[in-house]
Amino acid sequence: MNNDLKIRLSNILNESIVRVSEIHGGDISKAYKIDTPNKSYFLKLNSAINAVKMFQTEAYGLQSINETNTIKTPKVLACETFQNYAFLLLEFIENKPPSSEDFKNLGHQLAKLHKCTSEHFGLNQDNFIGSLYQKNKPHVTWVDFYAIERLLYQLELAKQKQLLSKSACPSLQKIKNTLKPLFTDIKPTLLHGDLWSGNYLISKDGTPYLIDPAVYYGHHEVDIAMTKLFGGFGDSFYNAYYSKLKSDENTSNRIEIYQLYYLLVHLNLFGSSYYGSVDSILKKYF
Image (cartoon, rainbow, N blue to C red; front, side, top):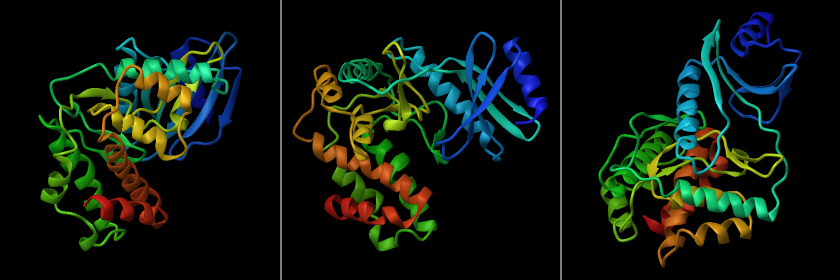
């Protein structure tokens, strides 16, 4: 990080910066802990062409979740461009490993978030899932939204990248025919959108926080599907969540179909190592 950026950040915070420490682990952006005499902050920095748009939509998602007063997100302090970079400056959350009680609280609070509704599926703006574009054009029905804006879009991208053959990809009508009997009585609820184990924090005092959202209004089980894709969040989380929002006889099938979206995203981001998982679900349902 150059000195000019440090000066800019110091001016935003109205505090001197005493330490900048790089945080490793992110795939897309560089991340830093910024220490001042009084407080710590979290900075994401990226020089990609679409970086400012990525950070703007991330900030919008964090603020949208926080405004529901159901579950916390880090406070957004600034989202700007500076020289050849875009940056997002956030409150720094000192975190700890989750206990069973922490998972219980996370489950209860996520269920409360999933009771925040809208008239349409989608969002008033597009955003990103990882570094991939995520379309959120509003639809009246969940079948149309999930078929067109989620599965079809990623399938077309996989074909363009030659990661899936044309014959492996179902038509839009075939997708809709599969979804219709499974997608009944579904109401639009606010989703985190990318809820894997790296996208929540438990603060030192036990407060759950959500980070790195890809928000839109969809079916609440989409977030649950992502939590289960790479290991799961623990029994106390799911017991707490399902005490507020019930499953039904089609939940397990929907979970797999929702995981297909995330597996397609991983296929398009990281390549053919995800082909087998994608192909298995495509063959099972379509």
